[in-house]
Length: 144
Image (cartoon, rainbow, N blue to C red; front, side):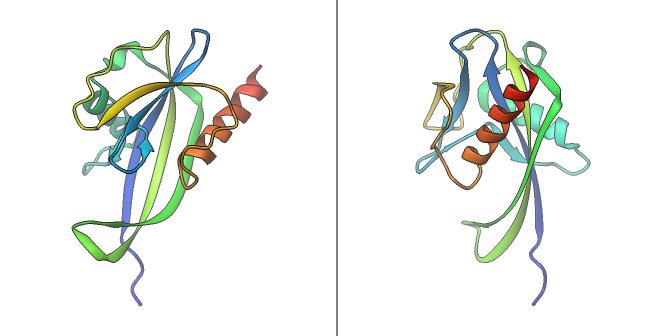
């Protein structure tokens, strides 16, 4: 059997510096997710993440400070509506993006966008979101 095709994706977990701390999630019809998406040819993970964040939220990248010490990678299998009989290996890189406070979101690609309270442990989506948020919590605890 041939190996699964690889799909590269990247995104940004936006987290507020202001208290109470909050993070941004985007509502798909069946789940919550981060601003993220597939890499375009020749694009780095950082370029993909920043482009997708801007496209999906309308947030100016100049107002976001990517934390150079945090990068979360995960690999998992996915299927797509266009290829329901084919499994892909998704390689996802998430960056931590700091904003001073919650910003207004131009939520054009999702059913809803919401700044959620940072109150770990989180139980939002077991495959990708919860492990990411646990990794961010460990990172923040170690940095304190």
